[in-house]
Image (cartoon, rainbow, N blue to C red; front, side):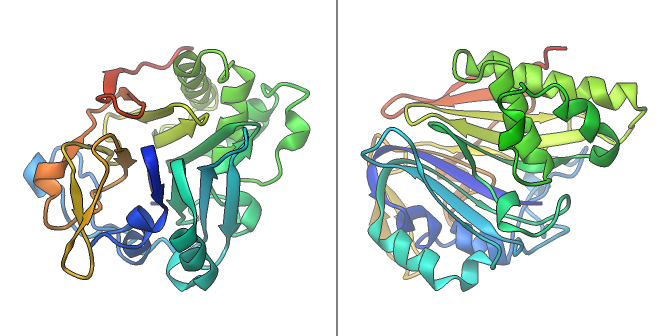
Length: 289
């Protein structure tokens, strides 16, 4: 499965999270260490992932001084893209999303790499719609006619994004995301797809990051928010200062040393809202059919 992170807070360089931590997103592209095992106790959740590498492309989207986000995506492995490393060392942002991909659905093309952009919105997820080829026609026909021509790739994530936009993401993000998940679940039922829909997702508009942890079978992939971080342990063995008002949402902890102190697991079936300087708001998430 893929791995991703989202940050909001005082502007920081992208490499603070993408490159420097002991289990940075770049390190997770080489070896993701977590996967949830249904029925397993929390203490045994750290294990080698079934697909340890996420080398089928990457992407980063960031907010700067303009009302729309910047975006850089490529199909090369994140660990092997010198341009990504150089950009991350120079770009400073108050909010950014980043993603490393394992292509379980769709083809390995730049158009399928996350995060996706529309207007001032960024969107990404870790998961998959099982049976997507059978469900795709029903789902895309629900996309608003003015948005449908903007779908460029063939990945399920992009379809989910445009469904959420159709359902009013800009006006009421929590409701739009719940309607999008509900539409996928209805398509699964209509087509007799028994395999679950699982997704941890992030949507951002430059002011707020919305995250969802959800699965049909209550066995979601992991998702964490940061707590009480004043510094992050880096690969060089020292602690990198981290802003007090910064907030991180991530598929798995960025540190190997402080994963129990600095990282709080988001409960199953939850919506988390991140704004700079505020504690994360976590509420129950239920699909709307």
